Image (cartoon, rainbow, N blue to C red; front, side):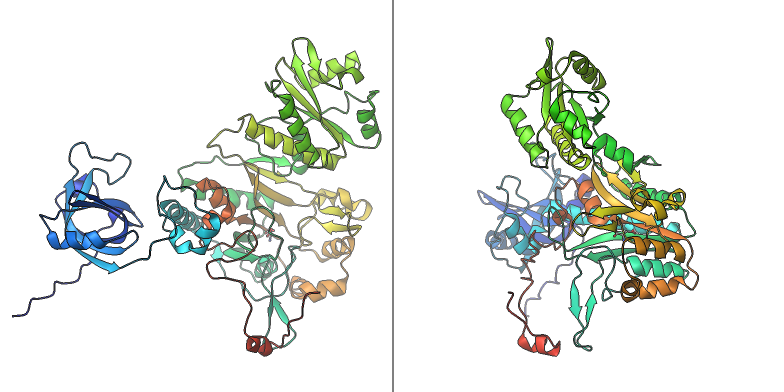
Length: 596
Ligand code: ASP
C-alpha cells in the first residue's frame, strides 16, 4: 500500500494570541520565520504573523522530520507548523512578549515558501536604523515590522471609529470622481490627458470641495468621504502629493454645528488609543493666536507667550526699537523662565536662528541678582528697564528675548524661537493632546507678488455677517467664517461656512479680481447649481494622515501611509514616475518636448 500523504495543514490559531490558557492545545500556525536559533540540537524559531510572535521548539528526538526541515529555514521563510502549546521552562519566561509564557512544541512543519535574504532585518530592535529609501524600495518588507503594522491597524481602527460616528450622526458616505475639473485649493493640479478628446485634460481633485458643495445643492444635507486629495506642490517639509482627508459638508448649519460634529469625530478617533478628549475644544480667534503665539497654529502645550512691549518702549531713545515702532512695527518679547544660564554660544545660535526667519536681530537680557545683563541695557533708561522687567514678569534666572520688526517678521521669528525653546528647555509635556480651534481668520490676504487681494481659504467662504459692510469699504479687515483645528501646533482641520448668496459671492469674486468669465470657466457648474436653491452650508476636512501620525507618535506621515512617495515625489517600489511608450503618447495626441 502506498503511504498516504498527510492532509495539508490548516491554520487553527494566530501566533500572537497564544497564552498560558492555551497550554495543552494542539495548534497549527502559519507565518514568517523571524529568527532561528540552534541551541545544541534543539531549534528555537520565532514565528511571526500579523498578530505577533510565538516561540516554536523543534526537538530532534521528539520530531526528527520537522527538526530536519527547521534546520533549513531562514529568516522570512513562510512556514506552517503543527504542535502542542507548552509552558516555557522555569526561568525562560519572557515577560516582554505577550506570548512569553508559552512555546509550541512542533511535531510537523512545512515550508510554504522560501525567501531571499531580506535587505534589512525585520523587527530587530538592535539593528542600526535602516535607510528610509531602502525601506521604501522594499516597502512590503518594511510593512512587516510590528511598528508599521501597528500604524496600519491604528489607521484602520481610526477610520472605522470615524465612520461609525458619522453613520450614527446620519452622514452619508458619497464618493466623488477622481477625474474632474480644476478645484480652488490654490495648488497646482495634476493633469490627466483625455484620450477621447485630444488636447483636453482632466484635473485630479485637490479636494472634493466643489463637488461636496454641489451635493448640498443636491439635497444630501450631510456628506462625508475619506477623500484622496492630489496637489502638485513642491514637497516642502512633510508633504505628499496625495493625502487623505475626512472630508465633510453639512446643510442648514452654522459654524458651531460643524465644530461640534468635528469634535465628535476627533473624540471617537482618539478613543481608539484610549484617550478621552474633553469637548468642546478651546477656541481662540486668529487675532489672539497671532498676538499671543505669533502663529495661526499655536502649540499651546507650553507658555513662553509673546508680550507686547510697544507701551514700554513708546518713548524710547533706543534707536533700534524706536525706528521700528515709528514705522508701524512691533516690539515683542518672551520670558524664557530660568534660562539665563544659556551659554554665549547658545545665545548666538538662538539669534542666528531668529535671523534665519527674517529678523534683523534679537536682543537678550539675562536677569541676574544685579539686574538685567545685556549688550543693549545701556541704551535703555532706568524706567524702561524696570517697566520692561515687570511687563515680562522677570525674576532672577530668567532670560528675556526681544524682537523688533514688522508684525510678520516678529510673528515668524519670535514664534520659531518660542517653539525651539519649548523643546530645548523641555517645556513640552508628553502625552498631552491640546486641541484648539482657531476661528475668524481674515477673509482675504494681500499678495505682495501679484499686488492683489487673494482669498485666504477659497473664494466660497462666507464673510462673517457683522463684517459684510466692510466688503465695500475695507476688504482686508473682513473676517471670514473660517476655522482651523490645531493639535499641539499642527494644523489638523480646516473649513468654513460657505457663501450661498449670489450677491455676496459676486462681491467676493470681484475683490479677488476673478472675472466672471473666469469663474464660469472654472466653477461654472457650481455657480449655476447655486441658482437652483442652494441651502446655507459649511464643512471642513480633517488631515487624516497627520492625525494618525500624531496618534502613532511618528515624526512623518510617510510612516502611516502604506505606500508613500519619497520627499522628492518618487515611488521607489513601483519605480514611478517613468517614461511611457511612444505609442501611449500617440494615442493621447501628445508629443514630448525637451524642457527648455
Ligand atoms: N476643501 C478644504 C481644504 O481642503 C476644506 C474645506 O473647506 O472643507 O482645505
